[in-house]
Amino acid sequence: MTDNKMFCFQCQETAKGTGCTIKGVCGKEATTSRWQDLLLSVVRGVATIQHSLGEKASREVADFIMDALFTTITNANFDDRSILNKIDRGIAIKKKLIERAASLNITLPEYREVVWGGEKADYNAEGEREGVMRNENADLRSLKELAVLGVKGMAAYYEHASHLGKTDDEIVDFICKALAVVTNPDADMNTLLNNVLETGKFGVAAMALLDKANTEAFGNPELTAVNIGVGKNPGILISGHDLRDIEDLLMQTEGTGIDVYTHSEMLPAHYYPQLKKYKHLVGNYGNAWWKQKEEFESFNGPIVFTTNCIVPPAKSANYADRVFTTNSAGFPGWKHIAASENGHKDFSEVIAVAKTCEAPQEIESGEIIGGFAHAQVFALADKVVEAVKSGAIRKFVVMSGCDGRMKSRSYYEEFAKALPKDVVILTSGCAKYRYNKLSLGDINGIPRVLDAGQCNDSYSWAVVALKLKEIFGANDINELPIFFNIAWYEQKAVIVLLSLLHLGIKNIHIGPTLPAFVSEGVLKVLIDNFGLAANSTVEEDIQKYVM
Image (cartoon, rainbow, N blue to C red; front, side, top):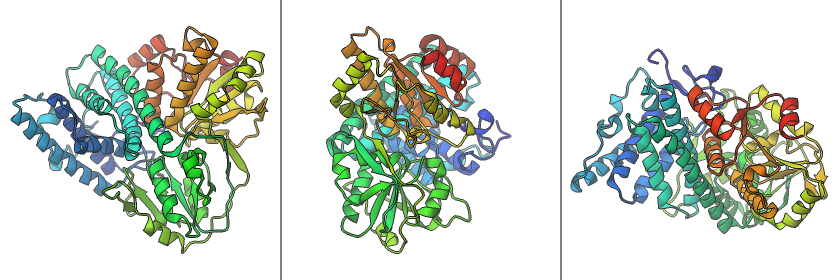
């Protein structure tokens, strides 16, 4: 490990399927990776001490933990200065918590992350991974990594909910507990396995909290046709996942002559009544996150990243001086927009740039249909149930998750094309860009691709499955004609998977490759207990699981 400049294996595209050791496939530099590791070490210390206190975490502690975890998600933050500032903030919070423990006569565990002084200069300059990679037992290390990556995804969803005023002390307490378990060098297999499974339980709670936050703020998503062409006005392109930010942007651009376009995972903003009422929210521009280099070139206007899914631009890029970040996202040289005391963002600088730009260049035309979150599906329940009972719909395939650059991801497009005409695709996340623009038709007026929304809206398909279980009187959710064929890329997909396992859903397929952080021993547990499997060929998987 000490010969490596870095070590990171948290995403699906990790180098050689084992781990990035020189530079991240995502574009992350070795120095950035080491500072992110240090930030994780600090947040584990903060969480462990907070858990030891046995009391409700303050807003300051909760916000730091969520922001720190979100910052280290793949493609979220490449800015060393930003990460170092978060480390300083964490060290200050940690010292206050230690003083709090002393005042209560609480003896803290003597884990490295707790007793370590926390100065940045103490970090191992040779790049040895702090925390889980110090454990030589591959299975213990794997379970620890599963929990850490799971709570990273959970923290991302929680942060979105908190921006809309929804918080949950039990979720914060659990994340502290989960990180305390990971930090304990003596935690055994059973303890770590239970920690992973409980992470799935609270993943469901976090997604339910975000679903409630989004729907109470913006209404229930509804069936919507989204324009994928362009208008004649200058535009702002908003990417990421945070709906609070797009609302702020829409309010501030209303009447300015500036159009707003969504990109990638922000597409579902068009489905919410309180957002789609803005007439200058004119459409979605482009495809999944990994195509942004060429699409940002042709967009012409400024781009706002509200969360992760940043691809570092080429040195010759013509758009690098018109990209902005906010929340946990960051990139060196890009302007970062901080929240005001009331949580809102001031996008006046973005709007000023937009007014100097040409209108976007059209790269495609037409419409795509979405808005099939659980409330909309329930509104169509009679029609869906009738189609199932009559045999018009024979099976559902959940193809939620992430998209990515690997050529092997063409599997999902070919899978969608090859599905029999009596099979409906249930999707969410940017995985849908592999097939949501295909002409797959409908079944008795029900589109064959039902898009629930963002990756966190995979929760909708769990809710729908549980409702169908009730309607059809099934004893077990796995008796339903539903096959889960999930594409994964980063840590939010990890928490979605753990949440589905908690809900008792078995025989889930994940791809295009299995995670590098899952050891052979842990994989065997997942296979034996949950039927987890990797993709085969399109033909073999359709014949075995769909026919």
